[in-house]
Amino acid sequence: MSDTAPYASKPEHSLGRVNGTGPSPTRSEFQRDRDRIIHSTAFRRLQHKTQVFLQYGGHFRNRLTHTLEVSQMARSMARALRLDEDLAEAIALSHDLGHTPFGHAGERALHTAMAPYGGFDHNIQAMRVVTRLENRYAEHDGLNLTWETLEGILKHNGPLTNPDGTPYGKYAQEGLPGGLDDIPAVADLRLSSFASLEAQTAAIADDVAYNAHDIDDALRAGLIVLADLADVPLAGPIVREVLALYPDVAPKRQAHEVQRRLITRAIEDVIATTSGNIAAAGVKTAEDVRNAGRTLVTFSPSAAQAERGLKAFLFERVYRHEAVMVPVRQSEAVVTDLFARYLATRDLPGRWGVAAAAAPDIAHLARIVADFIAGMTDPYALDEYQRLFDARPDFR
Image 1 (tube, one colour):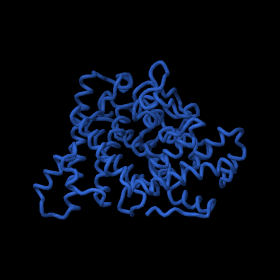
Image 2 (cartoon, one colour):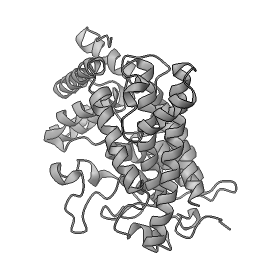
Image 3 (cartoon, rainbow, N blue to C red):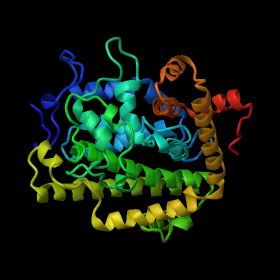
């Protein structure tokens, strides 16, 4: 019998998979999802996809190391909240499978290129990866994940629509991204409901990881020093504490002390706040969570306000630092030029070329090109750029 809370997702009550499988004597359905994700080609590619810092070396985060850190945090929070750790881990491990090469710069460029054809969204792309584009299995395309994992990948950041079907949240301005009508699942993914607590936990773990690790990488890159953070919300009190306790240790050790305290306090804040939210909402089942009408896994109001302040600092001092922006602009040009060339010539390798040649119209061709580019690693994208344009940007 499960020792998870009543409102946790239950693998034995899963809605199942599009393609039925026999029961496993050793693994739950959510454990099987986690394992399928880890063994996928798309997961391995994450090791060669940029997180934030394009031009720096191997000690900086890439998409894979970021994903592993998010997974660890999601699992820790899920355990404390008595949720299904395996589902939280599966969603965390898969949350970035749809990301392009070159981090958010590549995503922005691909979204702009795809604007006439429905746009590009990395969450929708992750769904395409796990339901269609992975082609390892003899009997079906995709990874054949459970409904609950698919729901978590799609909606871990919240609903996509209002109950009346109009776009919700970040989609209210630009509309729903293309590709939503091409995602198979065993049941309706219910775009207007909130996702499970496990999915919400994976989402907030992503925020915690970004904040702490982007500070760490920015310090390592020399874009900021610890003293710059002394008056920054969320991080500032911790920086002052560490500098007072350890004034004479090496800066990299001070930086690590800041990072680990920031992670610990953020996670403890989420656990305490979420426990109160669950009690106040009176949810008794996972279905109650979906119908709660709001996100239940949250920071406290004060921590949320401080976290927004920290994000504003990182945006201004790190993400828009000229040392970061030079390779960002170069990488955006690489993705833009690759897309235009493939769309004009259909000159894609292997099965992608076959699919491109058979595309019935420009919209279908554009989506094939977007699928191909999104799956690229950074080095492969640069190799293709060199093949097609006889040039290779140097991100330094």
